[in-house]
Image 1 (spheres, helix red, strand yellow):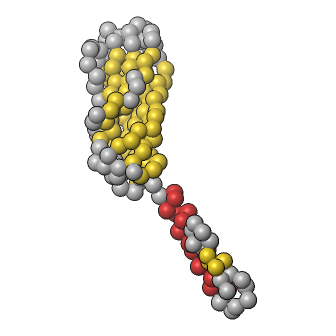
Image 2 (cartoon, one colour):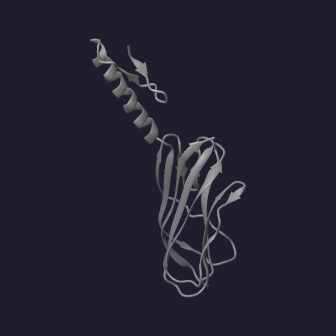
Image 3 (cartoon, one colour):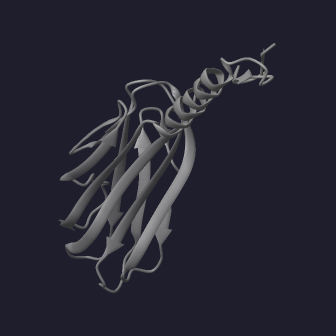
Length: 169
């Protein structure tokens, strides 16, 4: 007599009946479907390959121009939109031009939450990265803001923002 596993309810055959091959095939189909469901999670990525940032006392957001999305996550020039409530792993990166002096600052923002600011002191070129886990509601925009005080416009490259759903709530 066949039984079932506790968690996935896979059929455990006793291999004494002719239907055992059908039971094993059903098990393989269940395992295969579980693997697909586990890997098909909402995710998005935005990129602005090159731009200029003016100097001043205000944060600005890059106008993203390249996007990749999956499973209900959407992205546009202003960032990423969450499809469901849950815990999201978010990350951002900026490549700063090499200009001496000033501060380089970036943060990840959503309504009601701003990720800790990442600073580069003093100015200069290089990549800056920031990431974290945040609990968000459905239909919330995730954005990137940046700021610099080099005293002149500053070239930046590879400004990117990414988000992946880790768990629903």
